[in-house]
Image (cartoon, rainbow, N blue to C red; front, side):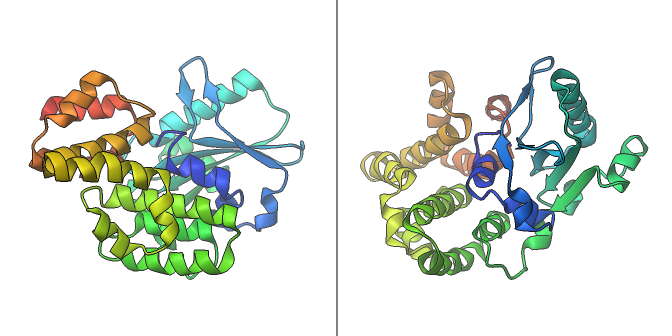
Length: 284
């Protein structure tokens, strides 16, 4: 997952979310700044780093994995030690590997056994949080991300009630934006009425992505046919994921068939880089 996508935004908005996931007191988040950092030698970029403002708290490196990756620990530890060599911080360090599913964890390879057994690298499996009762909005959004398509609508409605009852207007707007983004990612081919039926907060109608989807996706779908509407909505999602797309890639997406657009909608969440999209398009 790229640093400018959903989980990076979640950690920025809900500063205590990481510490909730590793089951530490939320007060542990005090004194940390969540940042993105690039390791220049190899152009590695972490999903995020919690940097403490004191020496006696560790730097915390974060990597989120939503698909199997056999060389995950090789890459993650390489990034960490290159960072340590480059910046030579005073603080100690810890790493948190966040896997969507337990099956995505490559397991304890002998090369990394001491790091894993000593909790130098802490592992979190988001699927373990699916059925937990929580008052945390950050955890609730994580549960929505992991939820099946069948259960997502009910979770979204429960979260809507929680948002209405317990948040300030500023946080409410941010949470609504998160929920709306998750729903659009999960159900990119649904029309406006179907999204409204799933998530009923009126604020949803005023969010930027919803309005963009309505104008660029739904209107095109009505005026130029459902296929073009689907393509426009998927392009909006891809623009959010990769900042912007080249005209060549946009043209390739616009020429996909309905079946191919449906396949692309399922594949988007597995893309980490624009090159993943390019490779997928080459196979079509």
